[in-house]
Image (tube, rainbow, N blue to C red; front, side, top):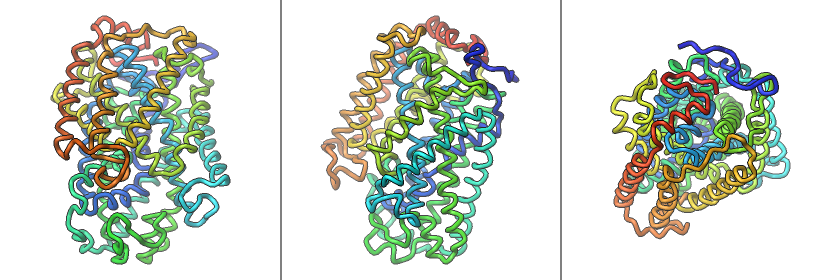
Length: 553
């Protein structure tokens, strides 16, 4: 089905979004979000957490994200709407659950652009010490530079989705080429096979392998495939292009990251292991791959990597700035936040949403001054957002059975609960010290959403669907309690690091508890989903036409 290029909603003062982005633009949007700062630091932090077994961590992460991606591929093609991941639970469970997962979605999107800026500044600090202190905290001048980066994201977005797609496509070609070149050059010039046997295959055991998935940047690096879903409301042919973009970007990203981990371990000089895996030491460690290139005597590659350390995170930050503005636009369309977030320019840019994301992004730098601190928080917020899609998936198969599904996931009713279990395991592995901070952010979100409803700032504010969301507080509190009793901290196992986790749940049994709890919540949510007629009413009220994949917003 070919979609029109006409604006998707609004009048002369609010012309709405435009359908100007094609398959390549969507694929590069997702791929460009995946290949960001994760490639610059993920291999180092994963090796420090798990040793050679970091290769297994990447495999686990890739499988987990692939399961989630297949679920998003069906939903994104069915409902090609702006800010899709924030809106799928709304159709299945109504306003309370929809507002909650919408907040999770916006939270991770708005916090990712600052992460990418921090990555660029970390690499820059190797040659410009004035950017950061010795503890990798931003100086006043560094913060000013961060503001300039964030402002650049806003300016490009204001030029419109077509400019954004072209800019991102050019940047992504570069972003893919440099990691691939790094893989080839390091494998050919500095590969020590003996490194893979140092201290055995898994020096920190299974717990190190699993915690690396969430806390070392692995899942963070692989996330971003859903960006095609977020821009589905601006796709020329969403039925065909969304599934291809979502799944293709995950496969490409996982292959590149796994190869990068292999060459990183192989390229480490023997002297790097003086203090063991947990404290690898080598020249210019603040810029890991550039430092290894210098050690290997390929200075020209180090120069390219330092240039890429600006281009790759900038491209990803650009896309997440776009995503944050589209998610808040979608939340307003659903009636959860003030209607001003729907204001668009003549180029179809939600300008208030964009400026609001810019301001909040600058504030985020303050409580999370380093890259690794931000990663754990955003990974948890991201996966909490992703958990809403599997829950909505199974329900919408029953609530909206006649809708045209351009891509239908085989065995979808089996894979949906599996994807929910996977998402919750990743959340758990992030550690208690990360999750309690996320809990505070969730409470803040509820206060803001409640204020919007009480003050009547959006005339479309829906009545609260409490019955269909009765499982939600039990889910959120339950995940917190299990994490508290578990054995994971953001910087390592609770047995060796103090973060408040009790360690009462032994390894493996904790995962059994998570799986059983997840399946119980999934069954409960499925049983209290919205009536079919109510789901259809919500779909129609947000411009998703009944019975086919069409939409106007």
